[in-house]
Image (cartoon, rainbow, N blue to C red; front, side):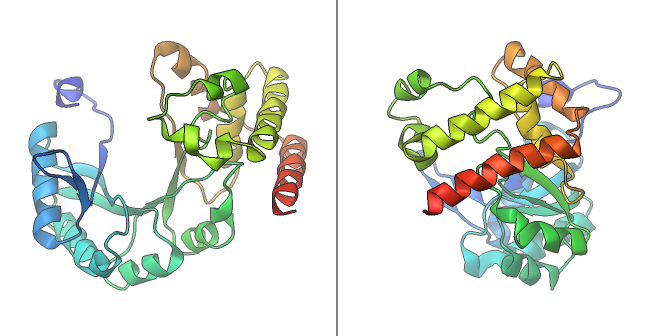
Amino acid sequence: MSKAVAGLSKRPYIFTKCSLVWDRNGVISHSLKRDSVRKEVEDSLKRLRVDAIDLYQIHWPDPDAEIEEGWTTLAELKREGKVRYIGVSNFDVEQMRRAQAIAPIDSLQPPYSLIHPEVEDEILPFCEANNIGVIVYSPMMSGLLSGRMTRQRIANLPEDDWRSKSPDFQEPHLSRNLQLAELLRNIGSRHGRSAGEVAIAWTLRLPAVTGAIVGGRGPEQVEGIIGAGTFRLNEAEIAEIETVARANVAQAVW
């Protein structure tokens, strides 16, 4: 990353996170202790070769009992100018309230997609009411709504790929999810867009959502999603998508 931004007259914004730490054996643990968080940010600043990180977030609210200590530390780092904005990821409303009692939250990063729209119930309204920016992740549900996922591809996923064991990639959910992806593909074809771009645009339709995190392993994948930044669904298309999505949820409950 430091090589990518070195020498740029106008560098991109740099976002990173804390709370997941690795030991010498590569074992991952969680910590929101003050010394641990400070070490993480100092290490990031050195690796990135920057004076300040634009957005620094708590990756997971784990351990829950350390949320206050971790958030107090992020507020200190912001005052010191080592980070410009501070945020949280995967927090629920009650956890955000606890953090807000210490210092304002600039952003939240939650999972959000047509398959998992749960944050619409409480979390997005809370963020909108409290002026908290929302950067959603997994808008294509790990490729399931990209339009490129097939039964054969899913069946051939290696055992160490977490998706091979995910209920969303197995029956009875798989058929409904692939049906939803096909609908997105059909809508996208009307505009020369991919199913993935439609899935991302759906998450961006709400004013509470500031942006969506997407990734590509190669140029061809980027080409299939980059148009979502400017593509907007009309009201009829949103209604069409949500009618099918609600039917899928009803079937899943039944």
